[in-house]
Length: 149
Image 1: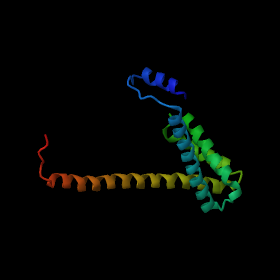
Image 2: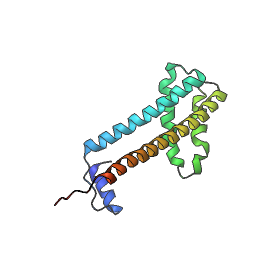
Image 3: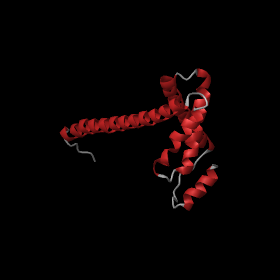
Image 4: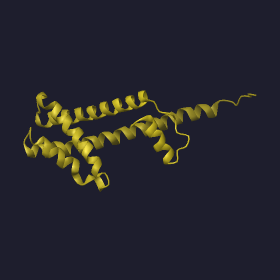
């Protein structure tokens, strides 16, 4: 999206004081987005490799399948939990390089694994934030007030 178009869109939705965007910022965000999709595709490949012994010759196919199904699943975003669209799509695509029953198990294992990792990440985030607040709020409360002015 061009910076001028994004400015117009932000103003249109009521964000009058929209920050100016540059092509370099948009390019960096796009690159980070691509790296994130590739990284999650690698996680998918590594789980498929762990469960089914998927060879390295199928690595790009697995990453591409993950990205394709991820992009297509945004089209059915309005459905609750996509009605298994991701798992069915991954199972169908991966059945070309592994047995269909194993592809279903891999797709479900990926969903469960990523959900567990998400819960762990959230727990670590909130736990570390609670510890941080406990340490710094206590430190700030024990320091005597200073006269500034």
